[in-house]
Amino acid sequence: MFGYRVPAPNEALLISGGSRGGDGAPFRVVTGQGAFVIPVLRKADILSLDLHEALIKETCVTTQGVELSVSAVVAFKVGNDNESIVNAAQRFLSSQTGAMAGTVGEIFAGHLRSIIGSMTVEQIIRQREVLASQVLDSSNVEMGRMGLIVDSMQIRSIDDCGSGYIDSLRAPHLAQVEREAKIAQAEADRASAEAQQESRRRQAEYTRETAIKESEIQAETDRAKAESAQAGPLAQATAQREVLEAQSELAVKQAELREKQLQSEVIKPAEAKARETEILAKAKAEEIRILAEAAASNGRVALDQTLIEQLPLIVEAAAKGLANSNLTILNGQEGVNDTISGMVGQGLAVFGALQKGILSGDNDDEQSGLHEIAG
Image (cartoon, rainbow, N blue to C red):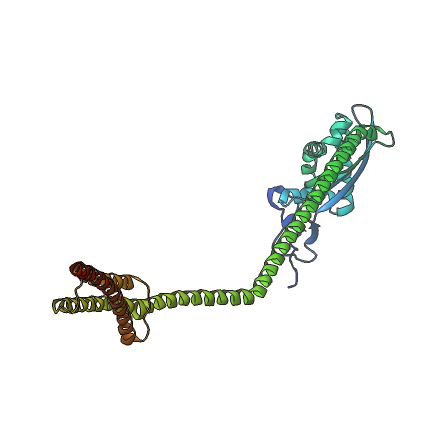
């Protein structure tokens, strides 16, 4: 719209030619909004509220008489309040940036020389922030009167102008730093060597453990192969042993069975046969005795009664001997009868011999009696 002006956010609109601004200012200040400017009757100017920098490079003398070349930078701007804008506009509106930076640089250079003159080189080097803070504090009043505020001040460099003073101050520290650096490097090398040794030791342990494990695995593999190779022969030997054990048990069982068969088929029948033989012999002997007694009673032959009584006992004794012997009788009952007949025949033969002896004795006695009668 014609005659309507709006300042940028980093600008202040200064309207002059009309009513005064607040607090008796010679012009009206507009920020953050627009305003009508009547042409010809009113004049509008713009004051920048941007941040500005002032570079300072000053040669200063310390309390020790040592010259120092100090370089610094100051960041500043116009204050945001109306009073600061009015003060800055009245001083720097026509040539804003260049005039502001030059003026601020001169102000800070003066305060910097004054403060450095009260400090030693060591304090300046070691306490740069203290130096900057003191310079700011001493320049606040002057900067405020000009409508300016300082955002920051930084000491960029400090040089002894070739006197070598700073280098002399720095030498012990450099030696200490170098010594500490060497110590640190030695410690680092030692730690590195220890780490390498530890790494090699761990690698050796791992290699050894791996070799042991591989040996164990190989041993297990070889043992498994050997067991597998021996499994067939071992199984065959085990089977043969079981067969032999079974055959041995079978032989024992067969021997026991054979023994029982012998008991049942040979020994028991033999014992029964022997007992039968003994009974039959006794019966036959008794028969002979009865026949002998009958023959004696008939007067066919005069036998001694004692001999007749002893004959069954002889036959019986023979039968008992036969019964107690381990004689095996063949041909069954026929063999038994043959044995008994033999025994009886032997008994009769003995009986006949005895009878002949007795009779010949009796005849001799009779002949003696006849001879006695004839004489």
